[in-house]
Length: 419
Image 1: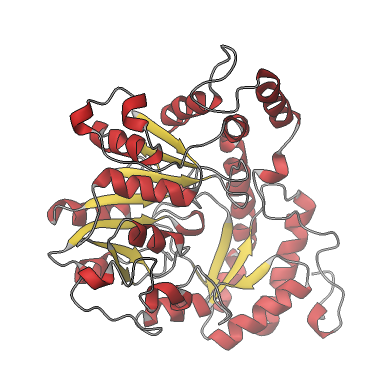
Image 2 (image 1 turned 180 degrees about the vertical axis):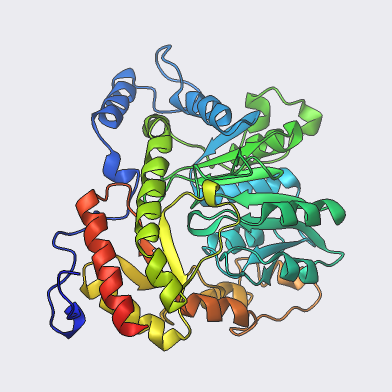
C-alpha cells in the first residue's frame, strides 16, 4: 500500500483517476451504432413492419440474432424490459386469480408487471446469492401459484437447478428476469433460455443497451404466439394467427432505431461480459489473502463461470460497519455503496409503496379479486439484513490495469483498517 492513512481521514486517495461510469454497453457506443441509426433514417423505415422501400427490418434481424445467440427458437423485441416481463407473463397465461412468486430484492417492475396482468405478487426472501431462496419459494407456494419469477440480480444467476425442480414438482411456470444479467449463463446454458420464458432489458444501465427496449425469449410456440399478440394490437392478424385464436393486444413494439442500435450492441455483448469477468476476477483475487485473514464473506455464486461480472459484493457483520466501509472505499475513489442503506430504493420490496399498500389503477384489483393478503415492510427480514450488510462495488468493463491495481490498494487499506 502506497499510503496507509485512509482518505476519509484525510489521507491520499488510492485511486488517482476517476473510474469509468457503470454503463457497460453505453460507454462502448461508437461509429457502428451511429452508422446503424443513419442507415435506418436514410431508409425512412422507422416502423418494424413496413416503410417506403424494401430495406430489411432491424427489429426482425435483432430477434433472429438474439434467439440464435441464446440458443432458443423464438424472440420478440419490445419497447422495454417491463414490456418483456408483461409479454412473458401474458405468454404464460398469467392473469386474475393467479399468484406469482417474486424475490424481495428486484426492481419493482418485476412485481408491477405481475399486477398489470391482474395477478398478485407473492414476496419471497433472497439468500446469500442475492437471488431467490428456493426454500422460501417452496414455503410460499399455494394452490393459486401460477409462476415463479427467477431474477438474476446484479449479474448473478439464480439457483436454477433448485428453482426448475420446484417448478416441475408443483406444475408451475418459470419466467427468468434477465434484465441485469444479459450474457450470463448457468450450467453452460445462457440465462433466459432455461425457464419457460426469458425477459431482457436494453435500458441504458444494462449490459448492452439501446437506451430503452426489451426482449422476450422462449422455445414454446404457444408462449411466442401469445407474446406476439400481446405486444402488438394486431399482432395476431399481422403474424397469420388464426382468427379464432387471436387475443386482444396492446402496443409495446420496438422501433427500428432501437432495433438497429441493439443489433450492433449484441455483437459486443460477449466482449463486454468477458472484460467484466476478467476485471472482477483480478480484483477478487487481489483480496484472497485479506479475505481469509479478515473472514470476509463474498456473495454466493451458484455458477461462478456464468456470473456476468458486473459487481463484486461481500458481506460484513453489521449494517453500520457496512456503511462505514462503503464510505471509506468511496473516499478512496472506488465505486462502492451499501446495497440498501435505508433510503428509498425501488430495488427493495419495503420501498414498493404501491405494492405494499395494494394500490392499482383499477380500484384495488388484483388484490380485490384475491383472498385477503398482507404485506409489511418487515415481512422479509433476511433479505433486509443481507442487503444492509452487503458492500457493493461496480465492475466496469472499461477498468484499466492501473484502475484495478489502485482499487486493490484501496480495498486493502480500508478493510485492513476497518475489519
